[in-house]
Length: 271
Image (cartoon, rainbow, N blue to C red):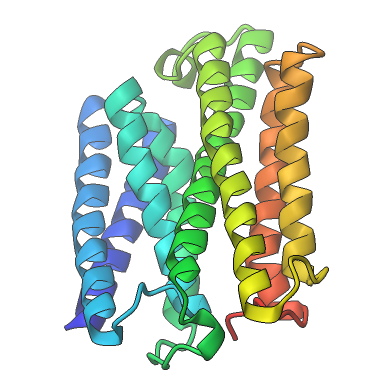
């Protein structure tokens, strides 16, 4: 049953991603609603899959790369719906749903076997640390989507092409504001994730910091988004520069999540 729930979620996310791409070229209120409904149905099945896996494993399902990629996708969709409720930017799905589908597709080809937790993961900090980290990274993922939207809208403004997609995208000021708010959500969550990770590391290994590749790249990510906030507040960097930095930052997030786990030897690796 758990497998079917995951496959249903994956299929619905694929359908939503296809409709979201169609909406970029010839979007209507109907296609936007279809995209949202498909994503919402996928999210419902996805939530049921995570709950069932939690029941079957006895712990929060983030203990291997399949589970982590799935949970990361779930966090992105959850924040997307919160943002959609607040700002009514259905078109954001055109920049988010393809990313979610690719992450879920990646999750689907990774080993799905439920393994007992290693002793080091049998800790209260496991759930706290990982949920904070994934929720923060999900906010960065949405900032990435909003950053791309900003650059697209800026292109239309500069080229004076004021029809089509330009009319359906929010204005630059709103996009810049949303980008900033997402980073102000993601950065404190990442900060708390690092702090709880440091506390957990001391209790597990007797050292607060081991200069492990995942720790190093998480710290790099933290500095990048800290720099985004700093230059915005101090140097007045807004708009295009902030959008580009949010895109670069999320690329680092993806490398920290997938690259470190797959190509580097790390005590944080899921596989």
